[in-house]
Length: 427
Image (cartoon, rainbow, N blue to C red; front, side):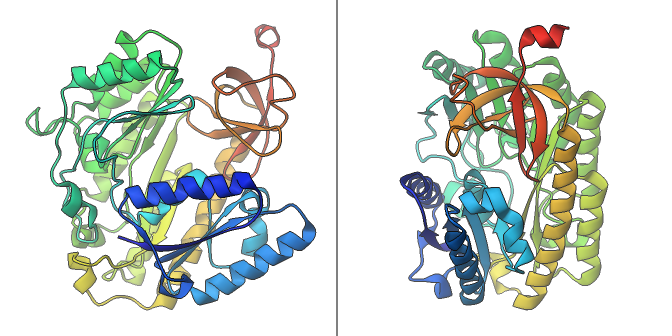
């Protein structure tokens, strides 16, 4: 697992975000390093209250970029409001929302669900781990050693857990697992039960809520891609969102990673959702700098990103995990990994920015789920794209409300919206 170093600047709210990040990292088996020089990843949680503060944040980011041998993640208020400042200053960092930091630190490994796989209600967000373990054997991933093979409770049991969350006040159910796409493989002879689970949650549970499906590897999705896409098209409760980490655009590298899927299978999953849904979000991950990745392999990954144009992209540099087969491979140089990461991150920002630019002028129903900065609230539209309403609290809006919103602008990785009266929409 990764060794992390985290620094926090600013208000109590920022310190609270850091606590949540650290809790998620520790639950995933990661542990703090003695300092940035011995960390696999350094995390800078920034403040932007004053111009002097901004200068200090940029300076500290530059220092951490030099001190940390692996990844640097910049998050917090300055990252969200002025993320381009870090790129303009040539700081080699991933600029991420607080919520995205733990996933990034996983470095392509499967997420680790809570040890007892029990539900958690956090405000209006309910966390529903649907299974433990996975069916993969990725050469770089240490999580499998801790979780083992897939162990799936019956569909009816997960439906009842989802029902309990809704009755307890959940407006959003986040379905999680090491690999949600292979849920039920152990019960259903290697065929996913995820479509049945989602269909039953949407048809058997009363109430106004939305469901987000967590990470599912392309191999598990591929066998049920058309059935699953049809379920998404049928039920408005489901966010039109899938997270299918492809990790590389090269079949040779995927084979060395032991990822089980081929690039064509990933493309067929994307095609099935394109055919079924007019407006949806594709989220994927790329690992750059895997030991066997040559320049041509990297270009194939860049080409795949351009072809599929995911609206949400997680880019991580390969980092060795002790006890994995990939740890014994001769690695690429740090500068090579930095250069490839920078090139892909720049492309990622172009692709993501274009997707959010296309949202401007669109009207969507947004579920408000968390506090933002100052008087703002943060929500998600039907495709699970993040929307900020700047003066939401002044308008009397509250977390847990569904609000019709017109998208007015964006900040590359999230949008800004203005509430619209339903009567105006009817006109």
